[in-house]
Amino acid sequence: MTLHPHLDPDLRAALEATPVAPYDLSSADLDEIRRARAATCLPPGPGTKVTDVDADGLRLRVYRPAGAGDGPLPCLYWIHGGGMVFGLPEMDDARVSRWVEALGCAVVSVDYRLAPEHPYPIPLDDAYRGLVWTADNAAFLGVDAGRLAIGGNSAGGGLAAGCALMARDRGGPALRLQMLLCPMLDDRDDTPSKTQHAESLWPRANNRWAWNAYLGDLADVPVYAAPARAADLSGLPPAYVDVGDLELFRDEDAHYALRLAAAGVPVEFHLWPGAVHGFAGAYPDTPIGRRSTAEQIEALRRGFA
Image (cartoon, rainbow, N blue to C red):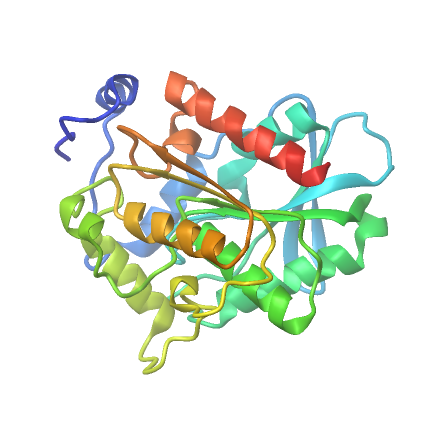
């Protein structure tokens, strides 16, 4: 992968030290990609206690501060990334524990089924079912249903935005915040950043393949599947939207943030100069990664307040 000339210098050094091997989803062994991602998961921090819960057949991974007791904690319902086609909650163990330990909150992460074996609406239905179960079983989980936020990274950010729309339209759980990190929102593939950064860390060809795997042969794409298609964004929870300026999703994320604001939704938007897709999760110890993580923590702190 050719590194962009405007890449943040610290991210450049990190990428040069640990080069990312490119792959083409259309010809790659998806099972091998899934195994490789599972094998490289970093453990949670020492101050985080992790348990897995069976939510009527759906696995939820629950994170709490070690020694926090059983009292109700504010909670982030989290949805992992992976283009809808790979990934698992353990992939975010280290990232999630930074929020848990900084805020004294709980995180519930959903192990949703993946496309193409399970296309739309299955991943979204799993994510939404886990959200409802979390709210309905707050006492069992030791979380405060009145201080519930939702968030996700990349494909998980798109699913989180879809769940927020569903919760609004179905009278579902009240959400204090939607934290959308470089969210995958728009299947239409028609923004300038899709052309400018076609060979980025998450390349355009893989993005197209992933959307096709998720949507299949749907003639009319529902707004819950691709939230950027939603005409009405009013009544949604406050949003924190975070994206790098050297990636495919820059334009769709910026446009979504502006449309949320125009609909009367409080929005905090961060466009990180010189940043690539998923930089804060992949390179949290770079200066720009630490700054982004700190902003996410503060957004959650305000959302839970």
